[in-house]
Length: 241
Length: 323
Image 1 (cartoon, each protein chain N blue to C red):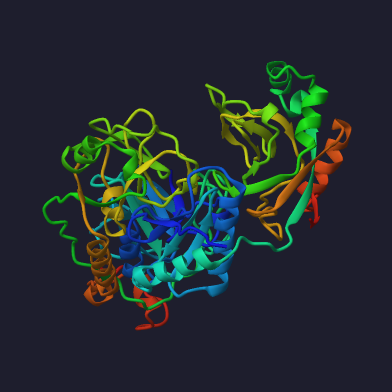
Image 2 (cartoon, rainbow over the protein chains, first blue to last red):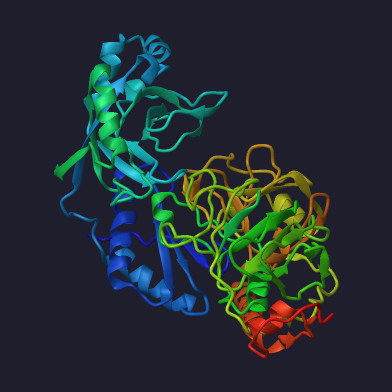
């Protein structure tokens, strides 16, 4: 299959953006992740690290160790010839307590979309999501595959602080946050799972390209699950999809 | 914010971990060279404010660079870019930064702190590397290797002010030709909204052609992003790893140290260079840092009894000072 060449854009003198498109699209994202995997395997000299995003791969390199035309040639070659990654995908099952103090916007959002809270939860938890990107905060996962009925523009006034491990909706995306911090998204639940935990092995659970399924859990279970996660257990499980 | 910083945390940006690290890596290098450390050893980074430290369990050899701050040990002033010994019970005082924003206090042998994800750099928002330093904190250090001479470096001549050099893109096509022209000709001013994450500039509006949202993509240190209000923000070491505002240009690596030291109110001019020029400038800067070690010169140390005992010139007990 003929694949179009990505654009390669300079980000200063020590990084390039390998851009496959400018939309949120599973196919584009798959190409980003395929190139990322291929570059990782090829490990050309001078590449410091790569950052896969929705629709481009940022490649950080040392300009004193690698000649950029050479690097571009390697990347163009890998980016064109490689079909999207078809390896088995990790699918996580992530427990979530929806609503009440765990997701303070759920009542407003349900009303806005003409749904009961139970219907909103069913629609949110009924999907299989794809992690497009980890960014913004350590381990913060941006998910695609949200039921279009639940899409909600971001809040006009962001909150300066939301709880750790919040499940939120922003635009057509849903996300799993990690550490506390600001957010302009709508909070619908919380998970005890720490996608990022200092000192744990592994420090990070999710990776771009993984799939996620949310499992609604009663709030009475929160304390026990939270304690397990605090001790370093993943609490989320995964299997190959 | 006062914090431990080395050259940064790399390999984890794909997990949303900002690299952090010294805002002025050249000054960090000078401080480390002064005390015989590898260039990237973690040091205490000061931002505008200084601080005082009490030496507790072991003598230290210290060196300071960047920010134009005064340094004193037990009340004795230490000349700029000159190392010093601080004995147990003595106070090390770093004054406020008088010329620049960031300064670095290096300890010979470095700090006895475990790296986290490969680095000692503090990234406050993520909690990585611990937290910024507060009054009362005790910082473990490696002991002084006795007999190491005190060294000094020649003063840095900054030369006449030159523009900050940039490479256009990756989203320069999102801006009008007037915006690009403004960026490359008009003076901007460092605003008061400046920190390790980003430095906001005030100046002519940089107008967008296609709106001010892009689907989030990767961010590098030095990216000049322009949100809806048309005023640029230069993203620095604690920047997020991804973002959705268009980026008009990127400051070249060789100019990041110099840019980080521009205080609020400073006028900034930008000029575009080619990638090839930028790499030549970077190589020159790195070469200059690498040969710094050759410019170290020993200093006449005021002969204190403690120092002489340390260098094993004499043994036994002596009374009185030799000063």
